[in-house]
Image 1 (tube, helix red, strand yellow):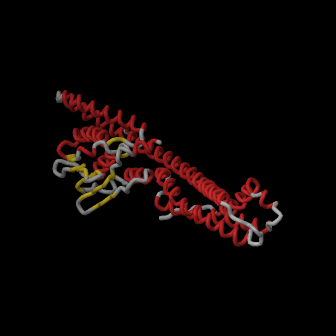
Image 2 (cartoon, rainbow, N blue to C red):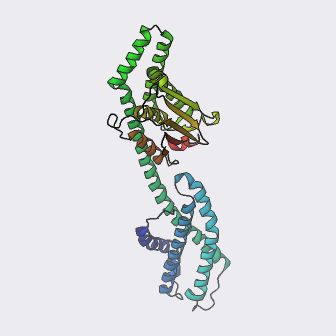
Image 3 (tube, rainbow, N blue to C red):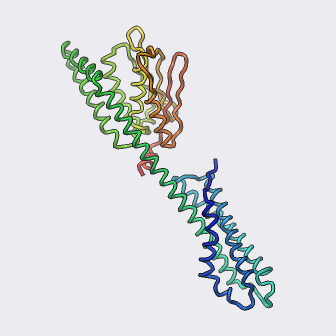
Length: 353
């Protein structure tokens, strides 16, 4: 979809201001010549500048159609340079024809010299560079403001997600359940399990507290965190909860927003029955450049666990702000599935900047 230039005022005031500036610097001497008709020269000067402005504007529109945004500015500049070559030659031809057959048509002995042609070639190029620079400067600044606003919004959503997740973990019932589980392990003298439980609990809190340092994290780190979080749940639910992870090693350094997988695991456990008679199975599987998180659907009674869908909304908002492929949510009769796109590692640098 082609972006609008939103340049009504610029198109209204730009050409006349540009014309006045050019006239002061370059065209005072020709206007004072006795043989020239000043009105014709002024109409010629303003008309050619207006046409040049419209040509430059068309070039800007066409290049933005294919190369929009800050991240493609180098390709856009190259495209503008390539388009400038035929544009300058056509504008030069127009100037030469108008000068010979209209502006100086009544002047006897007028001859267009090579140096005049080269001068007009330089003037045409100068006009294009100035006009395109004005449009590109406006566009770059507006895109920078949008990117800055989106970065701040993404940071806010990230912090909100981490705070919500942290609140969930420090809520009295979670701590109570965790301490009860730990107490049971100690009473039964299962010291190895107790130590592992403490390690997993500390890893979960450490990750939650550190994850606000970056807008993206590697899949490998996210899986390690999710595995630690799942171990806590597994200690509590036992055979009522299962998780299968099948991730292609080549995607482990790909990126995604922090806490994404944990939110999906938490969402599955929160809204579904997990018992020995009706085990809940969560699958985390890589599929091309995405991660699929799927669970068998056996919902708890709706009135017991109200759903705000805040976790899923949080994840989709992050991806929208990152301008990444959309998160897909598929609910079938017996399964619930969320497809999370993975971002290539090179994106981290552009996001951080």
